[in-house]
Image (cartoon, rainbow, N blue to C red; front, side, top):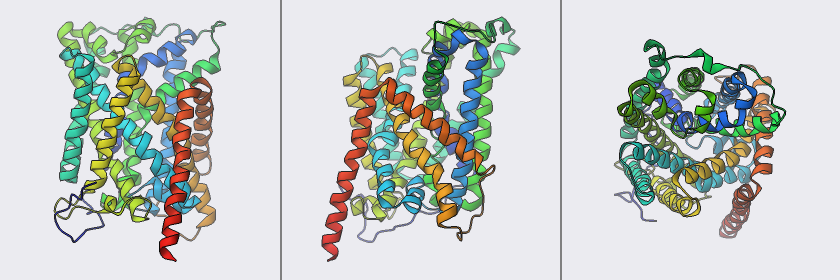
Length: 461
């Protein structure tokens, strides 16, 4: 990989440029992306036989579970306010190899898969405004990744400002989706019926498992603030606060948005749609409204793509500091003050993933779903281990200063771990071929780790 620095002198630490509100924007921008628009139909398709309450309930419950995880993450980030996030927490709690496997999976699947999926989602909604061929949508997704890679290499402040702007746009757009059906007198509460029903033809636990996996993608990204703790001003205060404010805002918006969707469309209509926002706006404003909604969703998914692009390189930087990735990956560009090499590597692999999934799946939506399923499955393993690190470090390192302690400990971390393990085994059972490939990729990291550590040992002899 080419060295992108302009001088033989290298900077190794990132400047603290980000404020608390930048942190809130990263949390909200990372989480609110494509899921609240592209996974709503999946949830209704799974649960409509059981009524409206389970549909809304799954969005609220997964939000509560995610909030519990963010409470634990706040304690860890305040203890270790450095680049790397979960990589650091896993290393301190379990040792170098589990931490490395997280970073390995983050690079090959979780982070790059998230970026690729969000770029694909942006292209899907652009197709609602300007009809594109399959190849055209693929090229748009690749261009988005390329452009944001360059922005992330040139300036952290530019990326953060871009994030802040798109976060405001997406929140205004979602507020419109929530409020407009009521103020325009197009709300029909009869669409919420039946509230509860019993379907002997469908297994409730299986349906809940399918819906749970669908809702986890809209909430994915809650862990993204931790990797940029080194960029945050007063991280011991601002990281936990940003997590708390951001998650409370997201859960509220998601529940209200789903209530609003179902005021305009019936459960059957929601279950059948792939473009929920456009369908709602078409009912409210006609064909022009559908195009306006598509632009709003594009802003949301583009902002989430940028947020993920910003956070990922900080993890690879931390791994390179420990000698587990090539040394050039932890160089901070002398003039740009960004992890430019790590950002470039992330962008390159993301483009290859987009090409792979477009070649594998039948349509762009299939590529999107394939990427998101792989991301969530891999994340279930390491997000659970990250939250469990709170328990481990309370025993292993009780003397460490904890500026913030997990609210509701020990119950709140336990709730997330339990729900995530249920989802993990359901997904492994339902899509064992694709998930086995993800597990094989994680396992290959063990081989790489031992090769690297062996050569480090030989060099140190």
